Length: 508
Image 1 (cartoon, rainbow, N blue to C red):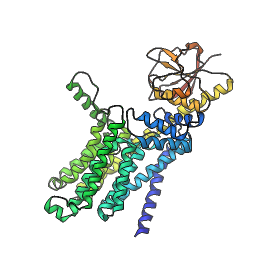
Image 2 (tube, rainbow, N blue to C red):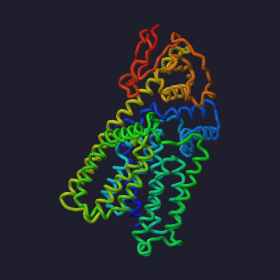
Image 3 (cartoon, rainbow, N blue to C red):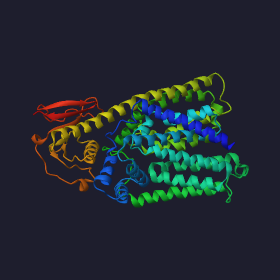
Image 4 (cartoon, rainbow, N blue to C red):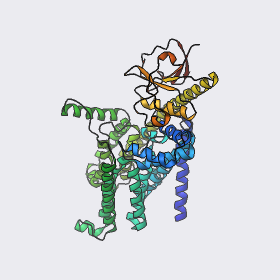
């Protein structure tokens, strides 16, 4: 039995590797280099570790304490700095690590499906529908916490399922351990703990005859102890957030004009969600719900499963009520959607007959629609990254050929993440003459507001004239970050295009 399960795990993991790396290699995300969002952190860390020779412990401490200004993700930055410490700014190696994490997540989701009573087909369909879609950006993007955070969540839940069936202390301890590190990795995953608690009670109610009869858990029940442990973990993590985080968490809209405008803002967010990244969930979900409504009397008996699903999904919508449940933030809510429609419904006793063919077809079409989304988004991501990396290497090549102190200016303001990426990528390669055009003041300086490590790279707030600039780097109209004409006269420059980026070199 154990050999058979190990073989099943191995086969599933190999298939998952083929799926994930097939997408990453075919679409070119695996070697797409650096991007605007989040990737600057790798370059900053590398700069501190290699160029400034900061000790590893100092870099970890610095990133964690800076993060406490607004967030509570100590393990995220701990692992992130370690990744740079071992691999440097080798984006291919970092992408491979993220691909392996995603493949493991798919495999564990498949095992969860099997534990919940689904066959191999529905178990892997459940895994694919959980990860494939706009949310797969969490895999090919190197910054999002949702990739590893989701792996921690599914491991914790899988171990919980094993504990509930076998009542082994070791399973409960390991499950609780992964819940702890999940919350320390990204605080938003704390809102999944109520589901883990409710599922334990749901399982106990369905399998414990005395609990069904007396409507309460015995004080000696291992399940009760496990539930209490999860509840304590949740409360302690919330307290730690209140103690450590200097900023204030809020998902409330900062909208003027009173409650009416705030409600209007939230409705606009919901509209955006369901007309963009959640559109296929809505469209095919409505078809599947229409089919299920024809089984109305039977569906009413699944009220506990429906409440469980809502306990998993609704907190995610509330958490992102202000910004929207979009792209990578769809994780882990997509798991709850897939669990109900792919695991719970197909194994229900009433699920048979011709009506169900439409339901099954909708599941396949939903997966195909999301694969199409992946094709578009991954393709653009690769194009954008290769463009930005190429233009930065173009700057290095040009400045090396001129053998002089070339001054480079970026036209990304107010997008400071683009500034950070270019500054620290070039700084890692020994080039530090990067200046920034500030749209609000029309000044050109070496400093900008969000540069946390300017004290290490050298602060210089004195402005210089535009006539001193030799190269201008800017996104062109092929880039999603293109902000139109920045009001800078580039008539004395010659343009060289690198995909969605342009490098303007001063004539003569």
